[in-house]
Image 1 (spheres, chains in turn red, green, blue, yellow):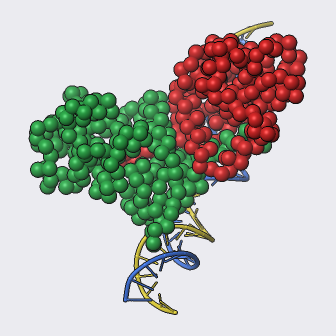
Image 2 (image 1 turned 60 degrees about the vertical axis):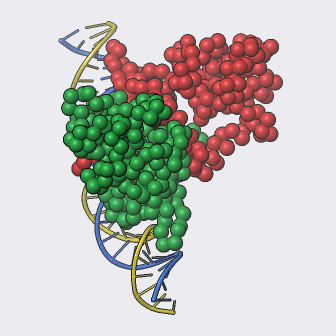
Image 3 (image 1 turned 180 degrees about the horizontal axis):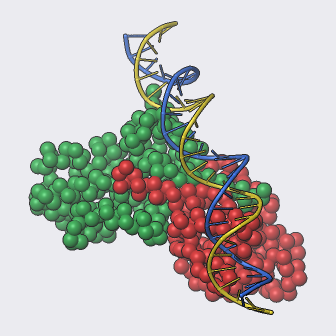
Length: 218
Length: 218
DNA sequence: TTATCATTCAATAGATTAATTGAATGATGG
DNA sequence: CCATCATTCAATTAATCTATTGAATGATAA
């Protein structure tokens, strides 16, 4: 076997590590910030044992590292570029697979039945923030918000949305974001807040993409 | 199963399509330009039947498309971004896997025993070309050169190098390139030409990366 | 030290993927 | 229309991957 073939085989191993929905879910959670196995398992809907196995595979592929903190093992992404890699994978899949288009369409159809409510692009969001026209709403769970968020964002986890409405400004448009383009949290938040009459739209990306782009995070 | 999970599963399918060394070899060849199954099979060192199977998988993942031309099926990449995707996969693997470093080191050690001959970066190559200081040598097979190459490049396939030395200019540094960072052709060409006393270095990327970056191709 | 907790390891069975073989399809040239 | 060629399809076996179970490890707290 030639050196080239060996190199391609190693690249293939890395790609295979990405080739499982559960592992992608773990990576998506890790893109929000480091976390112990139990948290990762819960977010991905796995048993701890199973999550641990998948994390070992990600570790062997060089995608995550782990350090011990007391009883817990804390996992994190080895490399910010992994977020970019998953984003590119998403783009390629979205462009070239009809199945993908169908699912994405369904995800977006709910909160935008008449097509009037396009998601806010990164450029539009930056402009709106600079001009003070928009307020940022982070609807992820508290621990993810605490691990890092967009500057000036207000954190109201989706579950507490109704109870904490008074924290939302009334004088500006609200832009909600969560874990990424496919994360349901901001979709649901937008639906709920629309019902209540708030001027609100989704950010088309999420925290990890913002951070990977080198934009400021807190 | 939620929509999110379904989306991640589809992304995982695309990643799995990249998760095999033979398929990566096929994609690397396709990144040079479209080709019929027989050519692809030969380049990847596969039987035609086996190559066909792998190409079906790549097709199902939306990474390649095929059209019939007479008796032959011509395959091509669906999307220029696939080159970028593979490049990013390579970068992440190179940064985070010791095994990878070892292999890459070995690949580079041969033609640069004393560390004096670093590969030429894209920036350095562009500058050298603009100033007329360098001549470009494409050592890929004729059909790949014909399907697209860097402007002003001279094509001498590696196998004919010794026979066609008179086509090389003697007044400039020569920069050799081939299919990509891990392609052996330019390494071997550099070794041979060094022995013969030519001032020659490798381009650190290859034709597909140049093209994917939006630089001009002929 | 012992009990407890978080995580990993080892072993298993079931599911998926890969390579190989030979037959089938679709286009071309006689 | 028939023979030929390039490619694909179908079926098989071997190999690999996944989820599950229960035992083992490593750190903490009583």
